[in-house]
Image (cartoon, rainbow, N blue to C red; front, side):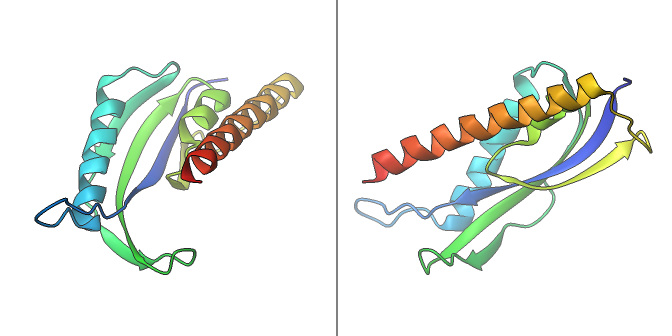
Length: 143
């Protein structure tokens, strides 16, 4: 299977931090700083099977009402164009809490063999279990 070219969008959530004496950072500021931090990691830390072509941080930070907490939450979007050696590598790269959209740019059509399908489903299952474990740890620390 040849390399797959994709464009993915991640939206990094900024949670307002309260300062001790003179206020804290707004949700917009936290989201922007988190986006810059995550993008610098993506640029500087190699990821097996993933080749970053372009990172677009030009989109504005936006704010929406969080249905769970009832508070306004800010998000800083980033669009990343990349090539992946395989669908498993692409799945591992994109399966994050911040994942929002994906567009396959190349090839126009993908044909999966039985083995490719098995590997892809196994990788998705692995990532789902990792994410579940992450959420459980997060929930345990929240209590």
